Length: 142
Image (cartoon, rainbow, N blue to C red; front, side, top):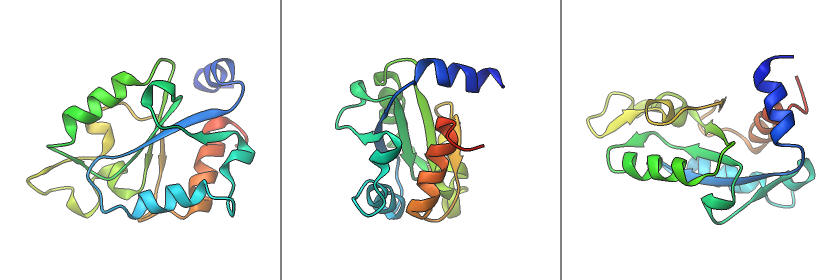
């Protein structure tokens, strides 16, 4: 078992509290992320719960490409989440900048500003893909 998986199992034994943030995207991923937490898809059955404060979160779920305006706020948000923490980049924009990767106001994907642990691809990713990515991150599936 890789060291990262062993550490994840040690520190995150129960439910994961998720804080989601948009770093400058079109809100397509945000809609699908929130949809994953509705009763239809029911992310809470896997132990995922949305929280309203980064200080209560275990997971930072970031969508959208990182714009120049959002960079300092994203860094502050990352520092606000207590250690140990997991960062998931959700969507093509958060993974690599999306269609705006070479725009003057976009720095790129989320990993240009903060360290990312897991990526969920798609534009926007379906709620099923978001749940699958979270399950992979939690070690529920291989």
